[in-house]
Image (cartoon, rainbow, N blue to C red; front, side, top):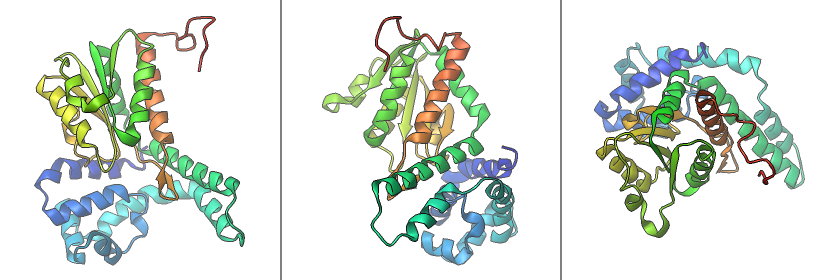
Length: 288
């Protein structure tokens, strides 16, 4: 955690200044947020090409945040990740190397191992970048909530369903906003000041989720956001913010890290509520 602290401080600084950045600098900020693990290896010309800006814009970005230039900013990422990469075997690279040496088509086992490797890399990133203060803030929001509203659309909906399922094992009143019949906003009508809305939203960020959170904020409710970037649309409006970046393979993003984070969030809440989390079902009933 200590090794990545300078990076987290930089990303918090970027998030705080994001609304005041020019369009070009916002694009660079988004790129850095998404590629922080590989930034130490990238050339300024490659980043400029990916962002469709001139290299001088990358330099201006670094100077905007207190560095003499791109190289000095890059050193922050290099220092944080070099030791981490040396200490932790890159399972994903090993699997990809194994697959690249095969002459035959990929088997189901090869595909599965590639995806497992991507998921494992995502879990490593989650552990390394976990913000303890924000996690505590999230637990305390749920602890004090009268009602909890959970919103997630499309690929985020399974996560929202899981959180709602887990929270139903507490004495909290939990509402899963399913949007059945396109009624997302209507299902948010009963939200009140002492309630909490949980929003799960990943790029490209569902408009329905943003509309629901605006409705919650208009009523004075608190907001817990689970997303993939401190620069995400809902991040700056959050009372507590948990970020998670999933591993991906074959252009398919895993849900492993997000599920893990949500399970840990529930267990931390159950601990504070003094629930017996080993006996959360009625004896004799089926337990899935």
